[in-house]
Structures are given as C-alpha cells and as structure tokens.
Image (cartoon, rainbow, N blue to C red):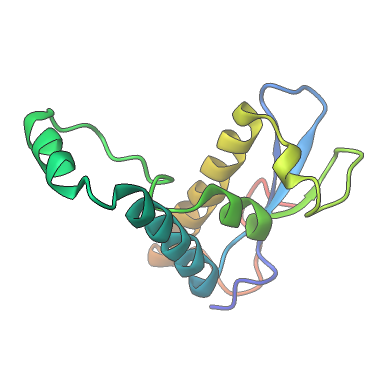
Length: 134
C-alpha cells in the first residue's frame, strides 16, 4: 500500500486546544530513522561494548520501548505533517519541549503499528484514512 496520503490528527493531551497531524511513514523513512539511531548508538558505545554486555546480562528484562529503535528527530521531521502551533514546519520541530516531542514520536510509531494491524485484519485499503484521522 502507498502511505503518503495516510494521516491522523491527534489532540496534544497535555496542551488543550493544540493538535498535530501525523503521516504514516514509508518503509524508507522508518529505515532511515532506525539507521540514524543505530549510528548514534554505535558511535557512543565505541570502547565500552564489553562493559555494556556485562551490565545488560545482570539487569532484569524490561519491556521494550518501540520508539527506542528509531531516531526521534527523524520520526518527527518525517511524521508531523501539520500542527496548530504558530510556527513553521519542519523548522520548529527542534524547538518542541521534551514531553511533546516524546508524545509525538510515540504517536507516529503507534500510527504505524495500528495501521499495520488494520491492514493485517483487512480493514484498511490504500488511500483510506483510519478512524479519528483527518
């Protein structure tokens, strides 16, 4: 399915009256966000891989964060189509506060997950907009 026109408008829960429209990301955009994240992690781990392995072995398992595999900046730049803020996109994305940026990244990844599930269930065809979407 082509994803370029699939969007969803969401109210920002901690900012009454504010909203964002997210676009479903293509496989290429998701891969770019993964690759960017991996490059950042690899760069920061040079020389400490063995220590990290030992620490990871000793820690109890925690639930995986689906957003953690992606670079947040890439997700936000490619995933936010519109917003209610009086600032230009994508220039102002880096000016978002931490809470809003984290929420938006979760919504973008969640949109992808929801849409994939709808597609697998046969409820979704190319060009249709999910419920609650703009």
